[in-house]
Amino acid sequence: MEMLIGGAKVGASNNQTIDAVNPATGEVIDTFPSASKEDIERCLEIAQAGKEKWGSMSMDDRSKIMRRIPEVFRAHKDELAELLCREMGKPIYQCEDDLEVTVGIFENIVEEARHLLGSSFMDLSSGGELGDVQFTVYEPLGVVVCIAPFNFPYDTLTQKVAAALIMGNSIVIKPPSDVSLSLIRYTELLLEAGVPGDVAQIVTGRGSVLGDYLVKTPLVDAISFTGSTEVGVKICQDSAPYLHRLIMELGGNDPFIIFDDADLDLAVEECWMRLRNSGQTCCSSKRYIVHNSVKDKFCEKLVEWLKGFKMGDPKSRETDIGTVINEKAAKEIEEQIAHTVSQGARLVYGGQRDGAFVTPAVLMDVTKDMDVAKDMEIFGPVFPIIGFDTEEEALKIANQTIYGLNAGCLTADMTRSLRVASKLKAGTVVSNGCSTWRGPEIPFGGYKMSGIGREGGRYSLLTMSQEKTIAIRRIK
Ligand code: NAP
Image (cartoon, rainbow, N blue to C red; front, side, top):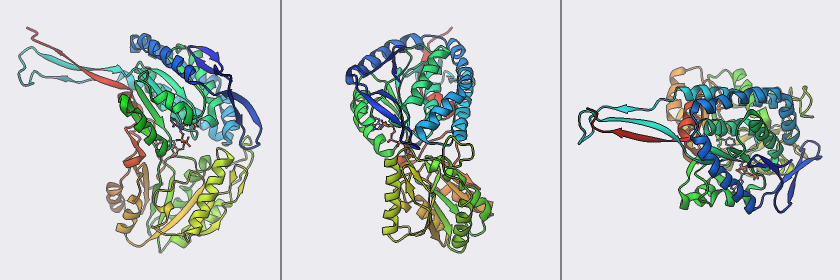
């Protein structure tokens, strides 16, 4: 497949390509371009021109075009889901779910934008006069580079794209290398719906190379990034001389605290959110902090429950668990399990690797000093179980990390649940469930090194615009 620059399908000017590989079979599906610096510069210059045209249209005119996007995506739903399934190894029905969420985000954002109200102020400012009127309007940021992660590529990208477009920005998409084909097709469909070719563009290639061209430049006004904290920090450092507006949705090591009075069957059911997408979910619970009196029982029930899931061909509707994103990632998970065992944990179930497939793993005897209990995020289907005796100790373990994305807590005592919720250092806290929760309208984002800013509905609109105050003086 090819990139989309200025509405035209183009290869890299240096003719270089990268293979897109199916992680379940090792088959090369297709190739995509490895863009050069010149390609990126040309794309950004086109985006600069595109922002003027799109930003000066009324929001109503933009919304007329954007209302066609859900229709076009629904018409291509099967094709988009199948392509994602081949590129990612994610079970087909989960790829279809991603598409539904994506379409919903486009539908919601256009409605939400109709209700984005500014502020007006009385003539109370110091030095003001009777007849002064002040009010605010939202204006576009300009050219927004949207960098997406591989795990939920359609929907994490859409959190950026939908809000950026309706607020009048032009966008340049940088897809994850492992899911480039799906997002090229996604961008083609934006254009098919009527978004102009100088307003939505996509460039492909390794982030470690393209990152410099997309970040270290004055041709960009904002960067909206979702991905690892490590890359997020690099982008912040590299963009400092330009003071780009930055939106950062980063990594996490979410805690799930299970108290002694918790319904353990519900606790185990909630573990599905760690299995879905082979554990590659930013806000899945990655640390199971379980009261010592119920830890063994929980572990026993979890292991029994895990035996009921089928791992295999992602295309089959019988499959619950597919691959992780690629063999390299699977090896990293294997190494992180081995590292935790070398620190004293016991692998009581699973954790075997075959190519890019990793069986769900349960680790017992994990202590609060181990890396996995603090800052080592495992992006795979792994359940480290850490014991605790007191509420204070559970909170201390939960908060002893650089991350603060989501957190969850399960107890029959709702007063305790709310007390714990108020003390957890996380952007979203789920009471009576695991940490995985992200509605389209709520503000989603992390505390500490899990991010800067919030996405979701109205919050995305605010993030993708700048507020201007207009003061009219002396109306008499
Ligand atoms: P990643 O390795 O950081 O990559 C994310 C994106 O950044 C990819 O498109 C990647 O392109 C690109 N990239 C890599 N190096 C870059 C650089 N120097 N400059 C600019 N862009 C660069 O993350 P990932 O493996 O895709 O995703 C997993 C991580 O994302 C986890 O930590 C997860 O928790 C986090 N995540 C967070 C959220 C959230 O909402 N907070 C949501 C989803 C995932 P290439 O693929 O070409 O390297």
